[in-house]
Image (tube, rainbow, N blue to C red):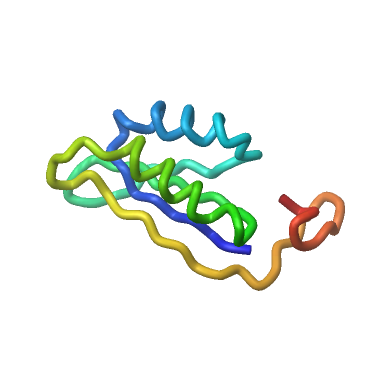
Length: 93
């Protein structure tokens, strides 16, 4: 399982969400990113074999060609637990 994190311009968030909806992404966390320019942070937990599709979708949706389009990075996640049910791993997504 991987955590995909993207920092993008706020005005492309709708396009990013639409692209991820097309992939049937179950959920994501969106928060304000504080920095020198306005940005939002999008975080998603995804299965390993789905990472490249998610990264490609986010980068294409967020790309304007201008400086400051953002960044996307991926880190491994060892354990995920759904607090309400105690489910672990992929079942917790």
